[in-house]
Length: 180
Image (cartoon, rainbow, N blue to C red):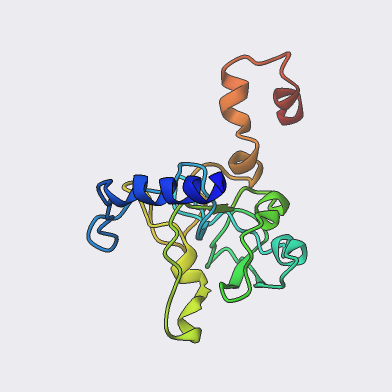
């Protein structure tokens, strides 16, 4: 009997409260800073791509949503510091489950996830993102690849940052020992 009145008490208590309405498309609410949303392919400070086309992200994806095809860099056309680069890179957001295993598998920290969460569309083909859509924008001081390596002569200068550690005198640093 009292449960009946408790239920009506909850109903009457909420009937007279002010309704909070979010104006979603006009007022875009920010996501939590650590939210995993759309993927992004990152770049080095000179504009070269961090992706080396190793395909580890595609192998780690349990939903088989990532397709990577590696290409070989040449001295005339260099897209990444290593021997290879991701020539074709696609993520199918119809299949992606947002687990982040691809991020964990990436050895160069090329692939990260932004906190952009609007991934709905009415066209299935538009939800297959290509490399051009996933690449991070060029910041001031970067130049569009292909171009020669600007941060050093070797790919180790990009990933280990050897000359910077050696100049700082990091003799006891295990990373510095690898550089010498």
